[in-house]
Amino acid sequence: MTENRKGQVQSKGEVLFLDTAHPSLMDELKSHGYSCHYQQDITPEKLIAILPRLTGIIVRSKFRLDKKILQHAQKLLFIGRVGSGLENIDVEYARSKGITCLNSPEGNRDAVGEHALGMLLALFNNLVLADREVKQGIWEREKNRGVEIKAKTVGIIGFGNTGSAFAQRLQGFDADIIAYDKFKQSYAPDFVKEVTLQDLLEQADIISLHIPLNAETRYMVDKDFFGRCKKNIILINTSRGEVLNTADLVAALKSGKVKGAALDVLEYEHLSFEKLNKKDLPATFQYLAKSNNVVLSPHIAGWTHESYRKLSAVLAGKIKNLR
Image (tube, rainbow, N blue to C red; front, side):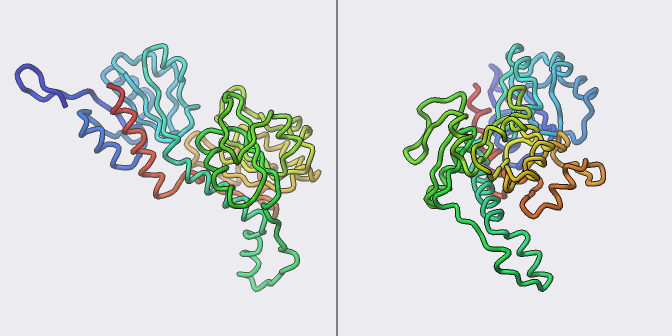
């Protein structure tokens, strides 16, 4: 809060929460002088009506903030994304209006790194299938013989927060870790080797995706991508579903080019990541669901009790540093 010449307390402005967040985020912003409130299931029309008076917006993923909406902003200083991806925000247009777009990938990097490793271990050791069988009284040891990570070459595409966190957790497995990041140079720690994308595709036994979704990365992993892989690979995707062409993945699984896949995200996800109706999904999903060499989870790689608080803490700090 600030005080005017008469000593009256003045608010820094009004912040609208379009989605849920850890309560600490609202508490932190209120303590820093912002007036905050949450409107559940607000319509675009209602948002447009109140947008001229807003100083900030807090969003996760279920609401799309495009030019059609943002053109009505008059006082908006920031949009805070509780999480990493900004694909539901027209960032370029927002910046042209002087609106700062903030996210908090530092808050769930550890969760995603651990989840990617966990999915890989589950896949290599047939844990999902073995668990199902043992619970049914089936005791199959030879069929469920596992594979070790040691001495495998793990290729990480995208070496930002989550890619680097995954690499960090792989250190103790004595794997050869290589990484490709189009937008960085001299970024890798000593235990990671920086390579070109082509080198990664030629060397990797395991490929893990840690890239944002944008026009360049949409369906980056497709038939051509798999065709450029020298080895038959294991694929991990904890980034966004639409960076991967599912139909091409299914074809690669059937041919053996992809030996197994661990997918925390699917291209069929609704914008909110929370609406997935099995009966409405195509045959490609049905194939994945029945495959013993595919491990699936419902976009929860960054969804831990710890990250829930950390995401808000990181975002609160960035907002408080704006002015």
